[in-house]
Image (cartoon, rainbow, N blue to C red; front, side, top):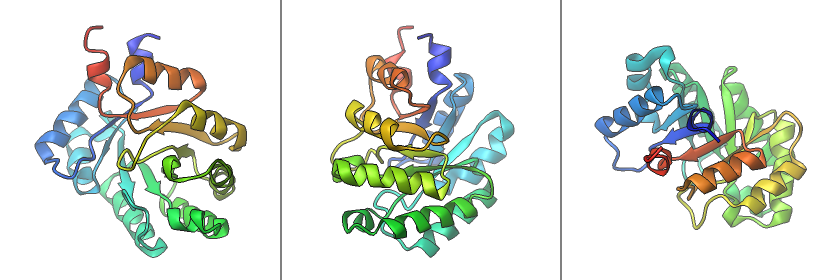
Length: 216
């Protein structure tokens, strides 16, 4: 795959807790310079990024990150605030405890509430696959589909493990036709990035894409 095509699917990511505006600004500039799908940044920096880069940059931010166990009302408020600040895309973490308890109706309703708060912006739903059984992952595909989210996303990158080809294949078998897949977590090499794209992922969340292609 040519680098330009690959980068058009990358959510260039900086979500480490110690990130400063200088760090985030660098990632945003790299995303613009390399034609990346978005810069995925902490909510604190959304307004600054949008004020500086405007429509040159798609700004993505995270909600309920990384644990997912804040209340639905809090996630809705976070989402509304992020949209007001200028976020173009929202990556939310589900309440994983609800999924483990089999409370899939509650998961669906939470996703639906956050989607409404997105006010037409793209919503990606992080399910943290490394903490789930295959049966739970399949059930969450139904939740994401029913709630009208745009993407299902494998991982926060902050838990025990990240994306796997097996989980992406499971998603492909169980999501609805309108739902896209974002692979994220531990994706650091060109081979991994292109492998997930060939599997059908529409987005890749990665902080190391430039390094993976630095000799191109």
